[in-house]
Image (cartoon, rainbow, N blue to C red; front, side, top):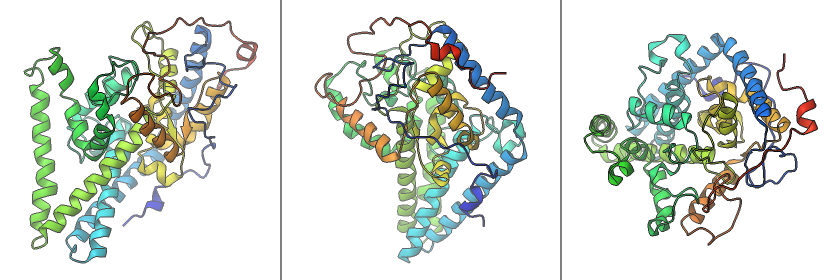
Length: 423
């Protein structure tokens, strides 16, 4: 059986260390944005930033090879070993240590399957291997959301329209009020409760998210238009529920209730962990939101800039990054969603240096800080705008409308420095 130590990066050279910079910092180095996080770069600077990031992309994709394929196959081997071991230990659940160990192993298996394997494989990060078991067009994961539904809602809608209000449905998942731009209603008072329930039931929330219930309720979409999505969710949900709550408990007779409880506990742990990592990458204070008008005629450099300002990272060790699916490097993931995620640690230092060079914030911090910021935002936005004033407001958007921003002339520091990766 493989152990988790085999998953550490295969290269001896480690990534450049990044420093923690939380959204509340008011560092004077961030001359590329105003006090509310609005970018102040000129068009020329934005395009230069895009070229610098393209250099990283081209270099890393030219280097893809055996080291990447070996890594993901090791991850899959460990995940399968954990699942087999975890389910086997649950069949010995009449022994409390075996039940506890089974829950831990099965939880780790589900987390690896969903995050470091499923999420990344379905982004096409390993399509170049031409392995049908690791190809985005064929992969199905151990969660309630059907792969095809998820790829449309996540890969296309979310990654194309990242943090664009009215386009990116992942802002609050249609359940939570996560920006002052959204009109306050009394239902927002339930923000903390809805956030808790979404965390506990996250796999089901992600699955049902693709139905676009809010559009059906508003009349923008008919129930008939959602039928294909609903049917796919129903079929996948039945398979998931049967596997975890009927098949394996029956195989564990006469301790079926203990096996049932072990599977439920593993799903709960996976749900809460996935919710925590994903929300820390998208919703801490200081992460930018955008209007459709602001991104009209957006260039490639502008798209890169939006990804950098609209995401946040988590600091931690190598094992933490693996168990987060490397979504602890959410900034790098949004810049290069189809790059094998193990490479995000390698390039994080370069991306941070580019941010510093262009006067942009690099929103990164430990889990406790970023998640505390997320929880504070969920609670703050449960109340009407202006009731609580803590931390930075949602950048780029205010409840009274977007003020005009005048771009400054390029600063000497910006015009005399050679862009990162310039050739």
